[in-house]
Each structure stands twice: as structure tokens, then as C-alpha cells.
Image (cartoon, rainbow, N blue to C red):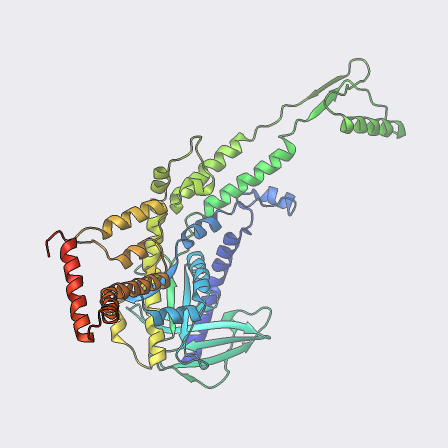
Length: 487
């Protein structure tokens, strides 16, 4: 039974590999030249290089750079959970999450694995996994994982670990150059490992999930044909600039000798004079010889077509046109720029919601690995993200002040600091400094009275009890006088 499941998931992974490789090629700008006539393609072969304008990388990067995890907290708490953030940072997930977001948006999905850490039981291991190495199977009618297969190659051996709700099975096979998953026979490669989590220790990070498609969809799927068209036009423009944008010269009326050494000599002389000619140098020849040049080709038709397609790419991808180099003659105002970015900001917020749900399941699974049992108290866990919008610092500060002032503030000081973009560590440090200042202020009056009583005992010879009583009366009298009343 397990052998059949391993082969089934491995074949599914093999079937999806070409599509994932194609998406990787587009993201890196190494896709082949498209929309080229087969005869031209056969004739030019490798002589025409593809001028790739790598919009796919900008489309993914523009969203990913707005996805920064800053902590985790329970819905009832005002501050972030320090322990969960420690586990997150101990696994280096500040950096790895960026790569996970890119892979999820390029491939349509990525995975996060959680397992015990033998060296530090209090810090579970959390790592991101590529869809090129991991294939998941869902329990029918649910979003729960039923089985996960991870495949990787090492020293001529292809390993395949099957993660089931109660155990982990180790399989392997020798790697062959013509290896096809349909023909692979995996063999057991070690004893089973107990899985106490009652679920495969993986959480999918899905981009553009749908009710009937939990594998997700690439962020690039809508723009690939237009990206091909832009690259084709850019390549054609470069070829035209070589052969048609520079003026071609011509000569008529020049007599060449018959075939033989003299004809070759004259051709070489003409060629030398022609190539060495520069503006202002006269061209001289015999009677009835005419010189001229063909008009050069204009490249504006290519430029206009590329600009039109780039504008469509920006509209479909939800990017401001100026992100793709489409600018108007008049510089856009700050309000216009923020308006143009509204679709991009909303897209980033949607990604935060989808990816944030996955990260919450990851941290609940990490707590289960650490404690040995699920914690129902973590059901209300939420992911804290940095604000994906780009308001100016002055605007954000002004809004924060207005929301925290008045007899009934709308938000707390810590929420205002979070909205201003401060990290959870910075917020905690500011709160601690405020508490220390409040404690000092609360004891300042008491310390002043003690100092006054000490002075009365030394200068007036009062007993300690009398000095403290007198100090209290003096401070009270001063207070009444300050308020404008007669003591």
C-alpha cells in the first residue's frame, strides 16, 4: 500500500516538474524566444539572442517586498508572544520566509516542515521546502493533509520519505540518467520513524488557492504570454537597429572590370574607401557615378508596441505603471502614486491573510512538537505583519497622534507604534522604558518628603515621627498654595 502511494505521489511530482521548471525560467529571465516563425527559427538557430525584459521578477518582487512577518500573538493579548518569536528567529525564518514567499508565488505553493530538534528540545526545527521536492495528498473532502512525499537526490541515490499521520517511511532507489518515475521501483531504506503529531509535519503555503484547487496557481500565469510578446518585440527591435536603423549607402554608375584579379582589386579599394569614409570627407569617382543612402528605419513602432503591452502587464498584475517604467511627461503627485499603489497594497494584504493562516498552523504545530500535545489556547493565534502600504512618516505619525489623543483614545499607544512600523522588540522596549519612568514618577513625591523630613531632623532637632509629620504638613500646605488657596 505505501509503495503504491510513494509511486503515485512521485509520478505526480514528475508530471508537474516541467511546468515548475518553465516558471523558474521565466522568473530568472531565461525563457526561450517565442512568437518566432519556425522557418526563421530554423535559419537563425542560435545566432539571435533573446533580449528578456524580466517583468516576472518585478511582479513577484513588488508583492514579496511588502510581506514581512513581525511576530505572533493571541487575539486577546496586546503584545506579541515572545517565545514564538524566539522560535521563529532561532530558525532564521526572517530570511527563509522571503524565499518561501517567492517560491510560493512563482510555483503556486511552497511548504513549511516542523519537527523536533534533538539538540534543543525547546526549539523545534522549522524549514521551508520547495514544491519541486515535496508533493502533498489531501484527505478527501477536507483541507487536512493525508500524506506528504519529499524526494531528493544525494550521491547517486534518490531518497523518498513518506510522511503519514502516524509514521514516517524511508524509501530510496538508485538514480539513472533516464529515470522516469513511472518506472522507478523504490525500496525501503531504513526503519519507520514514529510521528506523534497525528498529521504529516508539513504546512502548505498556497498562492491563489481555490476551493477545488489546493495546489494553488503561479502569480505569473496571467502575464507569461505578454512577457513573451514584449521579449519578441525587444529582440526584433535590436535586430532592426543593426540592419535597418543605420542608413545603407549605395553607388550607381561605377564600372567594375571584368572578372579577374583587377575586379577583385577594385572591389577591395572601394570597400576600403567606403568603410573609412566619415562625415565631411568627399567621395570622388569617375563621370556619371552617383552616391546615396537609403533612409534609416524608425524604431518607434516597436517602442509603442512594447509600451502598450507593458501597460497591460501592469494592469493585470496590479502594479503601478511606473513600477514597469511607464511614466508620463508630468511627474505624478504623491496622492496619485498612493492611488496607483492601492491595488498592489490590497494584493499584499490578501497574501498576508493567506500566508498568515499557514504560519499560524506552523506555530501551533511547533508548540505541539515542543510540548508533546496540542494547545487549544493557541486557536486564536494571529500573525503580525508589517504595514504593506507606503504612507509618508509624517502622515503615519499624524494619524497615530490623532487616534491616541482625547478622553477616549481609539487605539492604544502600542497599537499606534505597531502601525508606525516599529518591531515587536522595539515596542516592548519602549513599553518597559515607559513603565520605569512611571515608577520613578510615582515614587518621586515620597522621596521628596523623606528628604525634607531628614533635613528637619538635622536642622530643627525633631524626632523622626515629628519630622515626617511636619514634612507631610509642609508639602500639603505648598500644594494648597500652588492651587491658589490660602493655607
